[in-house]
Image 1 (tube, rainbow over the protein chains, first blue to last red):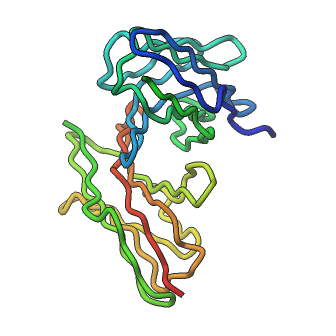
Image 2 (image 1 turned 90 degrees about the horizontal axis):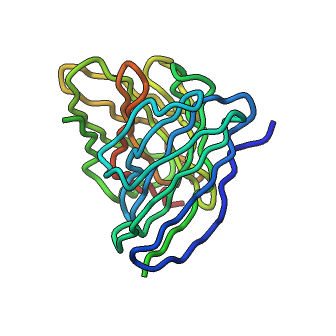
Length: 113
Length: 109
């Protein structure tokens, strides 16, 4: 059984650019959630996808968008990057929408200059 | 508004001493509460959830709805317990999650 993987590990962008982060769910998991973790803070919920549909969203602007593919892998897209978007982005998968145990990936460290 | 509060950013205890990591929450409904842990150089992982009512690695947590608390306790701390601990909450539908800011626990040998 493979765990949750994320790519890339690190990324540097400049303000105003767009970025795409990728996540492969744990085998058999159909639900994926994305989180933003700023330095010294806890993870903040961005959104959740269940069977390719957005199922819940936190307090993030529309320039944060996502996709989930038929194989349940996922992307997080951020447009018009701002300096405050610099953070660790975590992906977590779970077995089912009603199963709350989440399995986290190692994260992608995004730096916006 | 939903919120999870962990009042202590840092907590140090001696090996063998009891440890309690505090967590308070506010939620308009029936939440599910969790403790997640992140050991050095490892991923965030679930430690325990209140509905399981189980003890993991000697840790327990009781949901106190009257005090809206979900404190994590262990009677005798071990060095391997040193880690970052996050309290988390989800709504009944499981499509919203809120984490606290975390408590870094150091167990002194």
